[in-house]
Length: 113
Image (cartoon, rainbow, N blue to C red):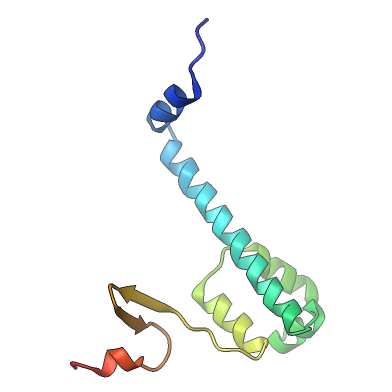
């Protein structure tokens, strides 16, 4: 039985059935963990408990836990930001131009329109 080297396996792993779906699911899970980490980090920086956040959202404390375990959406992030006293900003950048997706136009957006 011959075993592949790591380099050989890495070069052909994309040929495995389901590889693309596994990669997408892995990326989604990693994104969710990152979002949850930063939401909790900012909650702690604001010295808010999950119970206080739940009260601001008008849901239960276990509801906050479940909310953080589910996939992140813009709507969820907006609700969490507002409940913590913040403002969610989502921007998209093309080269040196930045466009706001949720808020008032940025300074660069009003030029040339």
